[in-house]
Image (cartoon, rainbow, N blue to C red):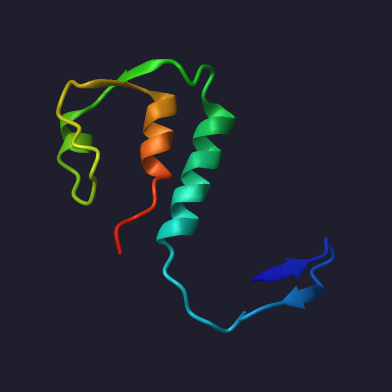
Length: 82
């Protein structure tokens, strides 16, 4: 973890040399991009065959299922199984 000022100087570091998996960071960044770009989180979207066939999901979505963007975000941000 780093705290960096706008000029690039590191003000604080904690375990900055520890290697971490990117999954949680990727999930958070994906959620931020969705929230910043979605007009209505209650809008329903249809699950594509490609999305339904993507491995690793535990939401159990199938092709042509309809789900709100908000519920997709909840599913995205659920704690991953260890």
